[in-house]
Amino acid sequence: MTQRYVDGNALAGPLAEVFAVDVTAAVERCVGCGRTGPVAALRVYQQAPGLVARCPGCDGVVLRLVRGPDTAWLDLKGTMSLQIPLVASG
Amino acid sequence: MARAAVSGRLTRRLSWRVARLVDYRDETPTARTLLLDVAGWPGHSAGQHVDVRLTAADGYSTQRSYSLAAPADGDRLELTVQRVPDGEVSPYLTEVYSVGDPVEVRGPIGGWFVWRPTKTEPVLLIAGGSGIVPLMAMVRARRTARSRTPFRLLYSVRSPADVYYARELARPTRGDDGLDVTYVYTRSAPQGWSGKPGRIGIADINRGGWPPEFEPSCFVCGPTGFVETAADILLALGHAPGRIKTERFGPSGG
Ligand SMILES: Cc1cc2nc3c(=O)[nH]c(=O)nc-3n(C[C@H](O)[C@H](O)[C@H](O)COP(=O)(O)OP(=O)(O)OC[C@H]3O[C@@H](n4cnc5c(N)ncnc54)[C@H](O)[C@@H]3O)c2cc1C
Ligand SMILES: [Zn+2]
Image (cartoon, rainbow over the protein chains, first blue to last red):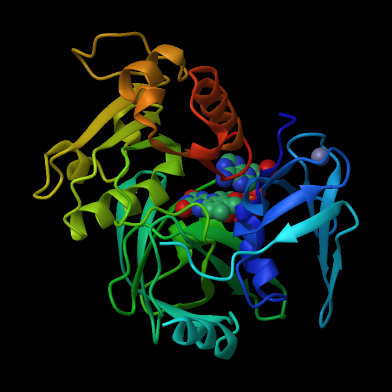
């Protein structure tokens, strides 16, 4: 079994510790291939230390989140932009 | 309106709350529905999940995600957990966790894999095993809201004994007209079922789904491999990527 990942949905709880909005509904643009899509549709690997989210287009790492006892370390260097809806959709 | 929505967000950072087990129901020999009480639960949408955190006496703690199985009902939450052999959390929740015991929950979580009763386009739900849980929340939310939106549920299970919510799905519940349920059996089928047991394929999704021209919203949930297969088939049948939402529960699960 090589597909040991879950969806970006699984990031919603951990990211809610950092952001005041639901970032999984945000549209992310990948630095590697330029692909855009919801954070919820990224491929999240939970076996790594912390959480690693990869682009479903090019498999590049677009987001990493490592949670320490009292710090969260968020690496977004694979993300070109995040477009965040500020009003809950109906 | 906008102000109320925003301030609700700013004043309440998502925090851990104590949930207590009120009752449980065994769905199958390996799956149990937990009825939890969480004081001050803010409500949720069908398809959302919670994170459940267990903490041992020595301070070690671990957390997992579980989908909400039913629409919000005051302080009452419903989760259905499948026991994963050798798992750390699911054997505890399905075998040890007892009425009155606490766990911590954080949620509701996730605003993308959700169905809201204001939506009117046809809905296709594709479940593999425990992937039925958030999809059942959608079926129940449709009923509660008296929605007439046509729903089709394609549910893949190993055998008839592995069906969750079996009675509720078997006899049409009041308010469930317009919900079609089709099963795919991967190991053994009930007597009189026309077909051969096997993994979900194009023919199943063609028969149990909607044509892409109907522009249905498709929700696929289950073990990672299952979700992958079903989503690829939907794409191959011509469904737009933006109409396919997935929730992978993790490793294959058989
Ligand atoms: C967003 C989301 C929602 C979820 N909702 C539900 C739900 O409603 N009901 C439910 O039962 N589960 C659900 N899950 C899966 C759940 O979070 C756990 O992964 C599962 O209960 C196993 O945890 P464990 O601690 O028992 O096993 P672990 O100790 O984490 O793992 C033990 C072994 O089982 C394998 N394994 C891990 N997860 C699974 C799995 N899901 N299926 C098969 N094998 C696995 C591991 O690779 C490992 O080999 C959900 C997952 C996500 C990401
Ligand atoms: Zn990419």
